[in-house]
Image (cartoon, rainbow, N blue to C red):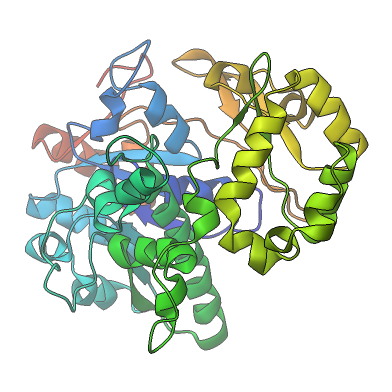
Length: 405
């Protein structure tokens, strides 16, 4: 493996989206990620279009850069195999509730006993010191708990709505990847492994309240919660004569340029409501409404030419289909057509960061269930007879070259 995390081994006990997204990031950066799955496989293997059972689209996009081993962790033999893998690993990451890890005999103390230097990371719903500690959590629940649907309604939606992507899962997944790398740096400096908790609720509460705590940041409060610009009903793609356009005019220079460009310099030069960023924030609804009315007078192409000539921020409104053909993404090589060993030609997304010394390369596409079971058990010290016994006992499954198990 190449990349800045080459040489780091991660035992990945996560499923569905949040944890697998975190470990794919780490795998893309060069870590050797061992995906530990139940014998039925990760549930997300079945979500979305697929050519073959267990290899659905979403699974392909959060599980590349990994090797798969299937283990029944409820069996003593499966637990023993997991502990052997952990003994040779740098990180163990999971996303079930800690109580479930304890019932499996795989809590921090048990794992640290076989590997005191391990970074043991739990990514789950709620911090374990509060009353929600044992509650189950999913993306929609956490979005609701931190108020994202109510913010959508305040911003103009007819009813409270969840963001139409797995926002909490992916944001917390990135936070988990950050936590892993920081804990590895701590271990590099001190030699100490540790237990790390990455709770969804608290992570997303910080994410949302960073914008919207607003006046309640102070004691006593200096105003209500909510960032007015983000909650403005006119903060949306602006209709033009023939479509929509994404425009964000933000600082003093940009507003002055815009109103000079349309022949109305007096708006910012004489109207005190719009003379500074503080005043504009207080009157943002009137300002954005004015912009909406102005942009409706010309076509998207006409406005784009004017905005780009004036160096004002503007972008087209993409659909998911048009995003796949975006000229910039294609120019930088973001999309790649790759030949998956079992799934044929698939569209893959590149690592979005660029490195001058240790550029990551995607060396593995998403694995089939149990594709690497025998390989990984051998690395953990099992011989062929012992592996055959585990298969016969129903503790693991081995994928054969034809793709069957």
